[in-house]
Image 1 (cartoon, rainbow, N blue to C red):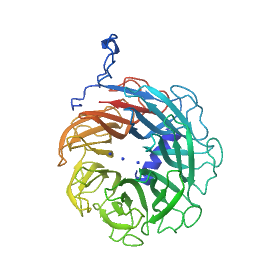
Image 2 (cartoon, one colour):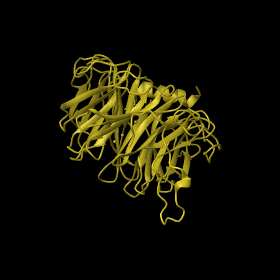
Image 3 (spheres, helix red, strand yellow):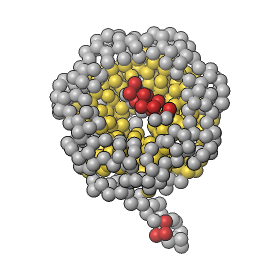
Image 4 (tube, rainbow, N blue to C red):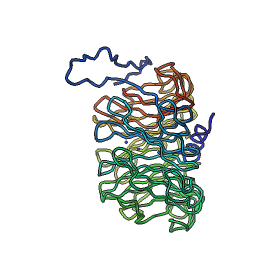
Length: 462
């Protein structure tokens, strides 16, 4: 595999990370034929279903995507492609932030390649209160290309504010002398931003507290211009990797990720297995209100958190644990989707283990208009366990609609002959969904366009 795919795999393995109609027939996705659109209509309808392969001749790996206020989408990730395929700018270094603005039917409106001379990996996008966008991830680059500050250490948080048409307004490099990786951004009520990720740095650079262990959750609050207001280091004596954050109705935040720590440092509960889900509720100033360690006797890796309409939370990730500790069902395969519903105090209301006989990794969960849930990730399982369709190739997008109590309503396996990694699902309207991830497949299975290079962004409207 080429370097970005390798780095993508390494990142997922190390930090266990990135937010909130179809059927299970296994038939290829049907797209509306443009010839069926009446050109005399005053308003051309948006095709009911469509897909787009977007990339250059190199490696393009998608992580975040959002629905924008103009009913389009902003998708982003990391690219080392030069001008080729859909890519309009050369790479600035060894991998750059690449953001692509799509309209409601998936047509590219604009795109930006943003980076320095080294590695710059994008993991978070949010629309801002002024209609622009904030991007966040990590950077190894010194002052070069678009980067206006030197690195503080190895990897630093790198946040970039864009206008609504992709022009850089400001940027900030935030970090200590070691590795600092940003995985999530929350837009705060005051127009600023909460940055969440993890750090191995001691006091140095922008970091005001020493590391508690090998890596810790690192929370940084910045104002609307990118200036640091405060930071908090939260962790135990081992590895704690923050992967997701959301705001709460009381002005605080839920920070989630994975912990290998026992009782030590800020951690008040014993470890349950190798790695556990670790949820920390903080107030608006970063002080810990409560925390929960959730898991079984093996590896349990949290990737996403979603706020629910009853003021609770949904946690999503993958698990290799059988019935043990807080896990109520045995593993079905090597790894399974593991989803839990918590109330607003962090008490578990229900959990569900969903999978086939192989590896199934959950990356996206959000509540739907009917108060159920849409969940998705990647799977290489054939028909087995909960899986009703065979794999199309290697890894496929695996999407499931759940009821409000976590039971499966329907599912769909979507992919081509090679690898597809689903990273986010957005409900557009009731029963309509936007899927975004990465694909290396040519025309095959459900895929209607050839790869532009190695890996490409692949978006699907269901």
